[in-house]
Each structure stands twice: as structure tokens, then as C-alpha cells.
Image (cartoon, rainbow, N blue to C red; front, side, top):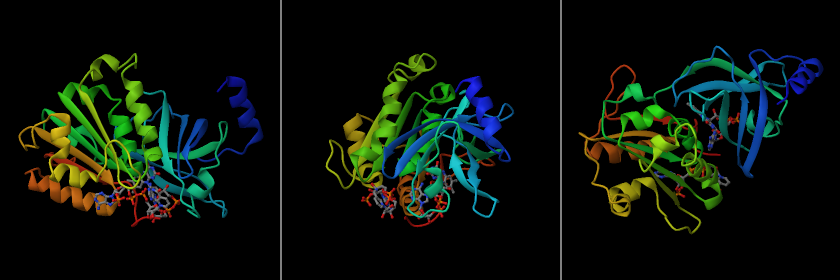
Length: 273
Ligand SMILES: Cc1cc2nc3c(=O)[nH]c(=O)nc-3n(C[C@H](O)[C@H](O)[C@H](O)COP(=O)(O)OP(=O)(O)OC[C@H]3O[C@@H](n4cnc5c(N)ncnc54)[C@H](O)[C@@H]3O)c2cc1C
Ligand SMILES: NC(=O)c1ccc[n+]([C@@H]2O[C@H](COP(=O)([O-])OP(=O)(O)OC[C@H]3O[C@@H](n4cnc5c(N)ncnc54)[C@H](OP(=O)(O)O)[C@@H]3O)[C@@H](O)[C@H]2O)c1
């Protein structure tokens, strides 16, 4: 956005507390969109963390929700990837934002999907359903990911092909990224699947890990707690079931305070829309 447009916005709209200005909005499906906003100069975060963002509610009070930062920590702007919940208090409004609009962003990043919460290893698995890919959109663009691991496997599963598109384009863009393209090289293996609409690769992440299909398809050895690390982000049911699979492979759940072999974060609270 140009400086003139920024000043125009500042003149014509009342300022929100902790306001940031929307710079870009992309609608991926009728229930998914991503957007970019200006970054507060003081905001430092670790790739994979989340913040509280929102809008002013009808009662004039901030209406805030947790959102993973989808952009890497080096990016000048912040990116978010969002669901559109029909009648959702925040997203029924948020889905209509346009460049120049303001959102509220509380600059206090937190979260468990951070490199510090894992012991060193040679392969890292990013396991996500739906908008749970957001923290990995950040981590896949972070040089530290490729410094720390020889292989990075991004498994993303959605019901339909169109729901994979944000992640697919992001992975595709990494090859030519002037900043980290070379670091990514052949290290990043992308394994998108659908569960309802037919596509070249299908099946739940839990099934593809348990059956060994993903190892066979990618030519990898099965998971080994000495070598493998994992980060998980999806619905409560998904997180619960993946944890059981990872534990069977011998991986243990870690935290910032006690790094181990895998970490988990909810992509949203609730059982589904
Ligand atoms: C740690 C954390 C990180 C999060 N990061 C993101 C993110 O990066 N992107 C994002 O879109 N949401 C994220 N969420 C969910 C987000 O906080 C809101 O719930 C979401 O924006 C919907 O807000 P709402 O007020 O419209 O509806 P809410 O009242 O918050 O939710 C209504 C219902 O919609 C369903 N729902 C909410 N969010 C989702 C979702 N993402 N996918 C599928 N169903 C959902 C649930 O069933 C929920 O009960 C995160 C939640 C947590 C706890
Ligand atoms: N996605 C849509 O097109 C759509 C449209 C309208 C409304 N909704 C509603 O929105 C809510 C969220 O939908 P969503 O598609 O974002 O999320 P979701 O229902 O959590 O499904 C996302 C992906 O995760 C898989 N999954 C779900 N539970 C799992 C588990 N326990 N273990 C392993 N994999 C699991 C699903 O496979 P399965 O397909 O095998 O369950 C699907 O591929 C749902 O309540 C849904 O009714 C979705």
C-alpha cells in the first residue's frame, strides 16, 4: 500500500486499539481465505506461534480470536490463513476485509509449535488438516527449519482438492524463493491428500502413517524416535488420533519447558462447524 493510501485510511477511519492495516486479501474457496497485514515494528515472534486478532464487535469491544501467524518471522508483513464460519462471530465479518481496512492485533505471540520444543533430529513431520497448515506455512518458510533438519515432510489433508490450494501454491513458490529457495532444495517433501473428493493421493494422515503408505510413496524409512520429530495441528479429534499414532512409533509429546519428539496445537476449539 502506498503512503498516500495509508494516510487516507488514517484520516477517514477511526483508529482501533493495536490496529494493523490490511494489505492483501485472497479468497481460496467459499470457506477459506488468507490475508496480509502490516507488522508492528516491535513484534518479534518464533515461526509457528499464534496471536490474538480481531475486529471491534457490535458492542464496541474487541472481538478477538487466536490465529497462527502463517508468515515467517523474517517477513516485513504478517500473513494469516482463515476459515469463514457461517454465523461465526468473528469470521462472518472478517471475511469481508479489504486492503486499507484495519484489524486488531495483540502483539503477544505464544504457542507450542516451535523448534525450541523439540529435541534435535534429522527429519521433521508437519501434520495438518484444514487451516491447521497455517503455522507450517510459517515454519516451511523459516531458514531454521532447513538448518535443523535434513528432511521436512509436509502432510496436509482436507476433504476437497480446492482446500489444498493455499498450501500447494506456497510449497510451489518456495523453490524460486530468492531468500530460502536454495536452502529448501530437495529437503521439503510435500504430501497433500484428500478424503472426500477424488485426487491423485487420498486418505487420512492417520491411515497413511499407520498403513505405511506415506513411507512407501516417499521412499522413506518408517518413523523412528531417534531421528524423527513431528508437529501436529488440526481439529481436536485429529490431534487425539495422530498423537496415538506417533506414540505407537515411540515418539513422546514435548513442550517449550521440556523438549521431546513431537508437539501439538489445536487449529480451532470445538468439534467442527
Ligand atoms: C491456538 C489456535 C490457533 C488458531 N489459528 C487459526 C488460524 O490460523 N486460522 C483459522 O481460521 N482459525 C484459527 N483458529 C480458530 C479461530 O480462533 C476462530 O475459532 C475462528 O477464526 C472462527 O472464529 P468465529 O468467531 O467466526 O467462530 P468461533 O465461535 O470461534 O467458532 C465457531 C465454530 O467454528 C468451528 N471452527 C472455528 N475455527 C475453525 C477452523 N479454523 N477450521 C474449521 N472449523 C473451525 C468450530 O467448530 C467452532 O466451534 C485457531 C484457534 C486456536 C485455539
Ligand atoms: N470441508 C468442507 O468442504 C466443509 C463444507 C461445509 C462445512 N464443513 C464443516 O466444517 C467443519 C470443519 O470441516 P473441515 O473439513 O475444515 O475439517 P475436518 O472435518 O476436521 O476435516 C479435515 C480433514 O481432516 C480429516 N480428519 C477429520 N478427523 C480426523 C481424525 N480424527 N483423524 C484423521 N483425520 C481426520 C478429514 O477426513 P474425513 O473426510 O475422513 O473426515 C478431512 O480430510 C466440519 O464440521 C464440516 O461439517 C466442511
